[in-house]
Amino acid sequence: MGFRKFVLFGLLFSSLTACTQSPEWTLFYYADATEIPQGAVQSKNISGYYAEVDQCLMKGAGMVKISDSGQGRYQCGLQCVATQDKALSCKKFVDKPAF
Image (cartoon, rainbow, N blue to C red; front, side, top):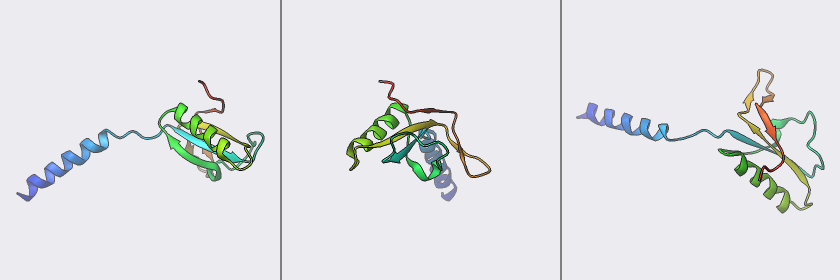
């Protein structure tokens, strides 16, 4: 009986994890900046992870809108990964809404 429960639990767990999707887009938010800074330590500016670029861009725009200064810049990076030197590498960046 214990083996049967173990197998059922394994099937349930694998079916739940098969339905999850890892976020593709990383939001980088630079508070009070007037331009996206060059050479900034991106890992310190991560503000969330999103499945769709539109979600990422809308969140960044919302963060600028509700900031005390009304300033700030944001960009979204596609499939960002940490490199050996602890920097981030993204396939591409988007910083203007596509809608």
